[in-house]
Image: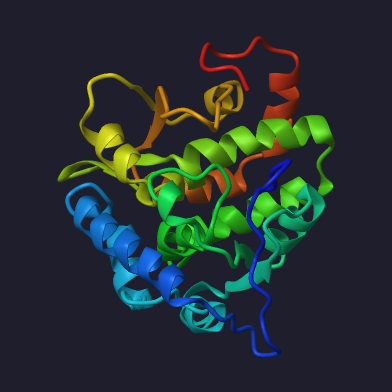
Length: 260
């Protein structure tokens, strides 16, 4: 997603899409990967873990976009697109509509290891790319991009809620218990544990219309999560008249939650 300001600058890439990372940046990736890989066990859904295994991400250095793209292309037709730290909403939706997932090629500083407001390459690759190997998640993200490309600014605000409560902060109920699949969760040490184990947040059965009515904030640990019963619900979202639902929401009161 795009943000109003950033203190980071993305790495330039060469003609083949490769960036040059310093030893310190590679060490940040290694520390993030090692601790997050341990935390997601028993908390991430099987589909995410299968995707992570398929990607075979390096543990000791920042992955390169072409390496990840090769696996995604074979799995679901997606590729990674290196982008600046900030991109417009128009470009964001255009990329998703073309099955190109934007990846800012910077990685957070050591002093911001635990939390970063804007999505860095760890968030994009470790958080999101495993689920992009899943056909249901990949197709929903593609549909979201196509809808957003044609939407008005007001409609995009509502569409962002749907993205937030699924692709970023989605949970799923499995035979083994509650598990996470959202990239915003699975790239966050604290939120991965909190969303599955804490008694504090409200966990609601997923309903597209209700999710579209629910405001959210990006700067707090989430008080509300929506829980899928199965990933077929993402396919069902693709088949829904989502813009029709958005028109309903325009005329309705928001569901209580954190204000945007």
